[in-house]
Amino acid sequence: MLTTLTRTVLPLALACALLGGCSSAATSSSVADGAAGSNGKVTTDTGAVPAQTTRTTSGSVLPQTPVIDSQQIIRSATMTVVVPDENQAATRLRAIASAHGGVVTTENVVSGGEKSFYATSTIVISVPADQLDVALTDIAAVGEVTLRTIESTDVTAKVADVDSRITTMRASIARMQDLLTRAGSVTEIAQVENELTTRESDLESLLAQQKALAQRVAQSPITVTLTRVAVVEPTPVPETGFLAGLTAGWHALKAFSIGLLTVVGALLPFLAVIALVGAPVVWLVRRRRTAAAKASKPWSGSPDETTTH
Image 1 (cartoon, rainbow, N blue to C red):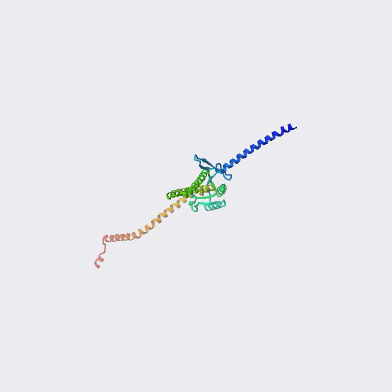
Image 2: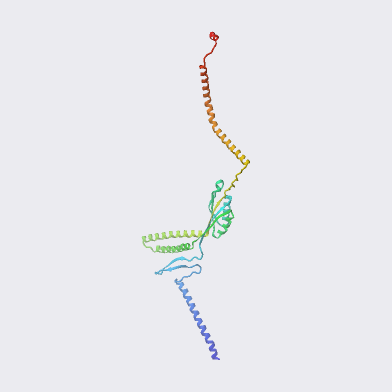
């Protein structure tokens, strides 16, 4: 009985001891890893995506491009819409932009007159990126869409690069500020301040790039070109026959009469002047000719008339 109990219990006790030893080793390893992390050799951040780093031969850590957990996409669209009235279409586009949380950034509307049939109007609206597709659907209802293009650009790497450079620049500024507090001579202070000013300027430039990229990712511009269709009248079919010839002849007679009257009307002022100047001249010429003719005619009087005188 005792031998059977020994054979049964002893192996179980040995197995429990072995399991306990393995568990202790794993716990010790976890504690050691945690201690190493607390000493600065291994760092983790459960609340953010860790950045990739490279350790130099001197032991310093150089930050590299951080890991971005989402794609950064810049989207834009272009549309050409045929509308009957540019002003009404522009009003509807403003309403669409406002309904989707966007704004009109550029507006050049041409309306009125015959030139509007051939001129184009341009309106650029900016909407949130997640509202781009819905806004394009609403814009398509304004008129007849003849062209629609959507462009997408992946700027994930560029955003990560700018973020990494900002982090590095801020660390560099902090070091320069620490050196400024420990600088002794005036020359050292001037050199450190010069370097600090340069780094602060670079940081402002990087922050401006970061803001511009964020705005371009968050907002999507839509360039809408509005055009009008000119009314093209159908080509008339030529008429033939007697009535067609009579109509053509009547039109030709009217055109000839109008042309003749136009010429007469243009010459009438000149004829009036010529008549006013020429009539006295003609009268004098005729009178002289009459007088000359009477003087050259031979006298044929009677004898009685000679005696009387």
